[in-house]
Amino acid sequence: MSHTEETAVPVAAGEEVVVEVEGLGHEGEGVGRAGGFALFVPGALPGEKVRAKVRELKKRYGCADLLEVLEPSPERIQPPCPVFGRCGGCQLQHMEYDAQLRWKRKMVTDALERIGKLDLGRVTVHPTLGMAEPRHYRNKAQVPAGTRGGRLVAGFYAMNSRRIVETDACLIQHEMNNRVVEAVRRIAAELGITGYNEETRSGHLRHIVVRTGFATGEVMVVLVTNGERLPRAAELCERIAAAVPGVKSICQNVNTSRTPVVMGDRTKALWGRDVIYDRIGDVEFAISAESFYQVNPAQTEVLYRKALDYAGLTGAETVIDAYCGIGTISLFLARKAKRVYGVEIVPEAVRDARRNAQLNGIENAEFVAGKAEEVLPRWRERGVAADVIVVDPPRKGCDPALLDAIVAMRPRRVVYVSCNPATLARDLRVLEDGGYRTVEVQPVDMFPHTGHVECIVSTHFTG
Image (cartoon, rainbow, N blue to C red; front, side, top):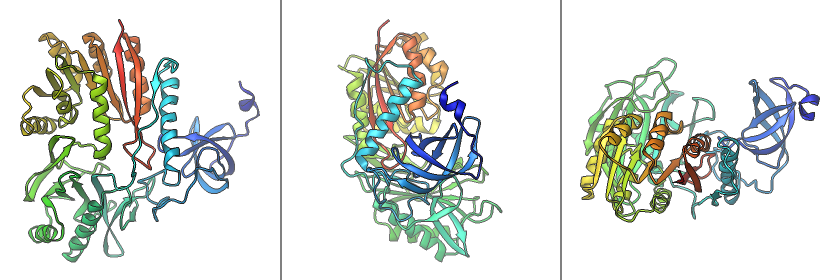
């Protein structure tokens, strides 16, 4: 037992404590210790001494609310957003941007060492690639709608709650997204369309979803409704189209579930096309209401060009893109590879990937719907020998069976794109034990002012 544990005085929920903050958590919270517990304190920064009130205690850690900053960090700044601290969308606007980049790299290195047990003496972890202008970078807004005081309101949820914080303009959203959300809210209110009430499950409009093509200026509006009925839908669409320059698509998505998931299973076009178009570099994409498409197009191009670099393609390689989505990475790779095979569990995404390949005149890419961990062994039985495998899994990381399949196929390189340093580190440990060496890790700041960081990793097979 350590000296700290021997002399620790337990803390209790509701107690006020002084915390010396040592680091950042994966959601951007300050992390320190009090009474032998690790405490997560949203709003606190590394190097600060703060007074906080313990909100809840788990077995190994606790959560506390920031009451007062006793000794501020030199990296603390005045957050530019008027609702920062109430809205849960951003966690780090009160931290200098260069400091955000440094701490995101540290979150990555800590995970690689602690979870992945990697020797960072032989792995190059580069400085985080940031943005010259880290505002208005998001091409997609998902804004909950509700009713308050008889008014239709829209905004983002408060941190750790389902309470809507009304927001005139979000500083990380594309300015067109802000304009469209406000226009839709205003027009819907004038037409008597009501916002959703989670307690009574009443009201029409659950979310306003807006997608803007940065390269094309095209706009899609998705009205997520609590059932099929949308009063005065035709008039609503006509007025939105008249108010929003660039709108090419207005869709309705029906979501009657009790879950916090934004989109339901049924979508139909109400006005215009069912897709909008955008470009990343010189590759064009058709984007539907359900498509997964990276929200920061400027940094996506940075990320994908690094993926090309790490893949080391000469034009003679066969590449497998697991978790290929709508084919974004696949089509970048296909320009430099002999053949690309993409696999994705969502059939609609595979449909979009095939359409995007045709859109760009790419004929050396094949897309299959299914679980990557099941499809890769079938491809191997067919004689597909991958030189490079690219994985870009969700936050939970790769399925263990997929990692086993990758190790069995023994591609020369594995390029791993990750939005979660913890699961990345866990999966890299499996690849290392299977004969791969982690060579380079490049953090990319896809989500400025939040606690999230994207990484791209190059691993080489060593046998």
